[in-house]
Amino acid sequence: MFILSKLFTAWILPPGLAITMLFLWAIMLIKKKNYGIGILMLIFAASVYTACLGPLADKLMLPLENTYAQLNIKDISSHDVYVVLGGGTHSNAPDLEGEGSPTGDALHRLVYAFRLYRIQPLPIIVSSGKAFQCQRPEAPVLKRFLIQMGVPEKDIYTDSKSRNTYENADDVKNLCAKMTCHKIILITSAYHMKRAVYAFEHAGLTNIMPAPTDYKVNRTCYNFMDYMPSLEALDNTYRAMHEYVGMLYYKLLVKI
Image (tube, rainbow, N blue to C red):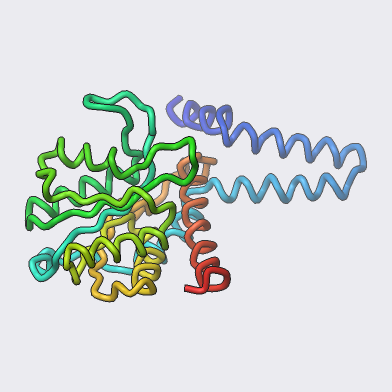
């Protein structure tokens, strides 16, 4: 019954339900001799199913997450500042003090910064603005969480203007110049670190120590549920593809 319940859940809820409907639609088209559209629909359904599989998502994520090794705590003391890149907030979500709360990625990054701060207190720059007018900047929300964790407000600096990673790099560079900080510890999700370091180095911040966190890849064996369609796997596939496309965009279009 346990296995049946898991299979039922996987295929009766999105994305499994959508994949099932696509396959059925394709079969109906083929039966009606609409072979061209039917075969295209089958290919599309198979592609969506593949993108929703944990093993595929891990294959795409692993090279990104393995680009930089985990931080060596012994090296922290030789640096000047922690830089935490935002990972999204729920702008108007009710919270204990104020409004707004970090999404999963942002919270992982904040907690990691706090853990490092407890080992070696250094100033923390939180860099994250808003992408669209209707949103609120992320940095003030993330700053509030750090203060509530126990980081003194005097040790927290914010960049609330940057809209993406290469703007993070430019704004952090300006902040570091004002703070006379030259060697930074860069904190972001492991899958995002490669693109972040690339952007920061091209902004002129060459003394960077990557501090990857928020690992997504399953580093144990797979079970049968990993081959069922999953929103989490689809999300990780999207994240990985976003990083690869982002790197290509930087190199070809932004030319940084």
